[in-house]
Image (tube, rainbow, N blue to C red; front, side):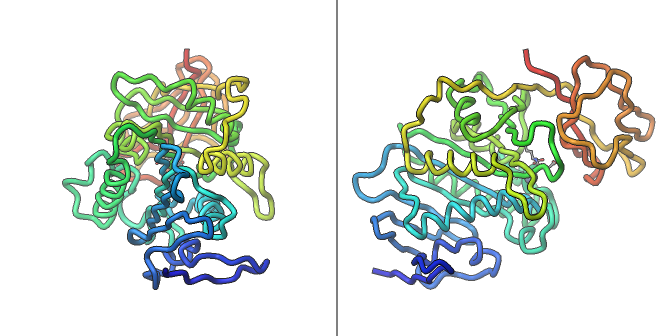
Length: 340
Ligand SMILES: O=C(O)CCC(=O)N[C@@H](CCC(=O)O)C(=O)O
Ligand SMILES: [Zn+2]
């Protein structure tokens, strides 16, 4: 049985496939595409950046869990979080009792440390790659194909957490975006599970989008979220990142969820308005370092564009994802308000 191992700095043995991040960034094909942990979990390299894990015989508890990161190559914290989880599986420290699909989504952007090389990958899912000939469109199609194969068995629970980082401080350090699914309200249990992972807020979307989590939610019925992980200034590691790692470990090991019902669900927001960049004259009129979820008094000027001024009209408004450096026609910020 194939079993290339390396030794980590603390002397522990690590399966070569536990180094998926290093393989992906180096553009290497592993010598062995299938490996087994000491406990018998099966790791299979599917292609660049993609690893499928099958629990050892008799250990599968019926959950299909997708964890993805690196859709935007400059978002380093989520990439590190996923790497830590994969390495822990490769060292047999985390013992999977769920099927896993672990994805580093955008290797070219990760290599360059940029949000995107060409098109924004996270706008090309739900089939939106179809009329697009870019490399990102092919990657979106490939990711969709892996997910479709992974979720092909009916009757199993399906979860997907797509890990991102908003690249700015946030009044609510860790938050989620819940994609819109026709005729489906987000389940209380999945919201409580977010809280368990140290997620403090959730933006509940009310219209379709082309994100990866929207794809798995709408096409595969998965409980899917984009998670915006907390920022960590150099040399720091906020507790909520460990909170997420601990929760993810519990999900992978199918550990009892404990006092889930005792948790308060995250604070819910809905989208009031999307600020769309219409021309090269677009300018944000907010401080460059404004934190996500900063409250916006009525009358605040947010942005100006050709013939348009974005001024706050709604009570209890907050800013999310302000970013002027986007393509024309794309979102340059969101005005969100508490939900119901
Ligand atoms: O847009 C930002 O400021 C960076 C964070 C980020 O990449 N967010 C995701 C949100 C996806 C969603 O709405 O589910 C994105 O913009 O793709
Ligand atoms: Zn992102």
